[in-house]
Length: 151
Ligand SMILES: [Fe+2]
Ligand SMILES: [Fe+2]
Image 1 (cartoon, rainbow, N blue to C red):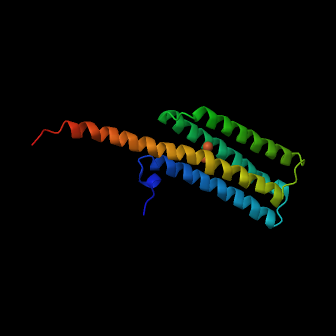
Image 2 (image 1 turned 90 degrees about the horizontal axis):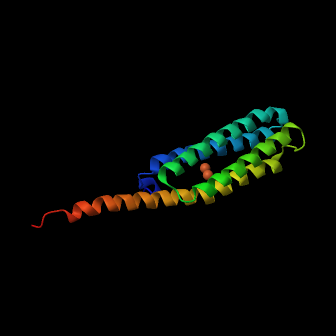
């Protein structure tokens, strides 16, 4: 059975976001696996850079959707993205300079970083989008029902 979010007209956009969220999770899982298999820090840098690129693209997609749909909390969400991207890029820079040792503990930072944002702030946007679609649908049905001739 489909959830309210999946039934919504916004589901295409939300599916796009979920595809990205899953890709980000897969990259973080790949980093954990690489570390578990004894990969050296240099070997994981391409994965970290992919994560940074994907995150940047994903944030731009979300921000574009928020602007297009008139999301009232778009500015705060954008600031959160900027903060997260700076944290991620700072983390990667420290790894490149060898100032952070990439291990399972430091990688859990990435998992928490992504998980908290997607489960709280992105979910809040998704809920708002579903309600907005429902309101638009209701408003588009109401006038035609009123203009129906009396029998
Ligand atoms: Fe997201
Ligand atoms: Fe977001």
